[in-house]
Length: 325
Image (tube, rainbow, N blue to C red; front, side, top):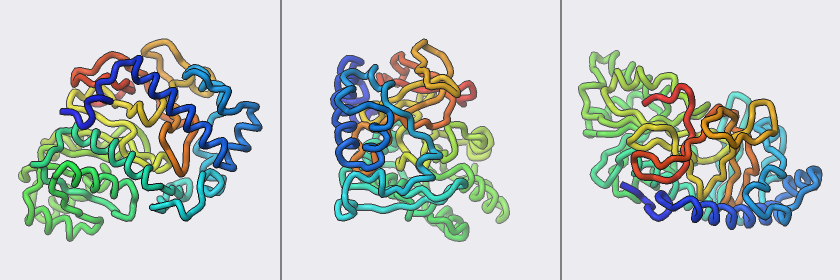
């Protein structure tokens, strides 16, 4: 099943044309509206007009997570606060990440999340437990997308006592949460003499905040007897759905109409073009309104897979040497 078959099965020529059109608009927007990018582009001696092809992206300067933590988020912002619909602050080990969203940003995130959920088998018959802090914008996007699909949403929150009550009250087939919170649920159930495997959960979607790898994945799968899917949701990106797994579990599909991906050699600025070569994932937003990210270095070690997935999606995928099937 597809949430947006036209995009998810778009041919490569069509996708690249769409990416270039959106990239040029994104760069022009960032250059005109963002003080941070005005300074950054000027220092690098490049302008939005210099980007006439997707290959020209390599002329743009990189953006690192250290930069994001060191600068004022309002310097990146492309508009006055009156144009902002949502304000979110996420606490990270390195500090706070402040993300601001327009109505369009939220709509784009919900659209991407809808595709990701459908790829994991969510539909209008699903009953989904959503664990976590609902003040997190990414959690809100997930809830909106679930409701758009017609799924039943059980907002579990962060209190384990509420988790235990809902587990007995509602027959849920899916849990969406971080690996850490899912493990807490397993432990709390065990403390009351119950086994999570005895509940009708067939699907667990893990929100991985630190990286693509889910170190707890096999343990969660063994304990729940459920199929585990992974979303990649670093706070810096402000979305939980840039990369998602489908039922084929052959890597992570990239939302290529919203993010332009590159693979760059480790500790280098050299773009990797050879197939199946490992490098660092670099992404550029193509439709961000409030806070564009241009050539953001994610720190994730991946390989690019360009063949059509077994699920039928033509979206490129990234894989790691340790991707769980």
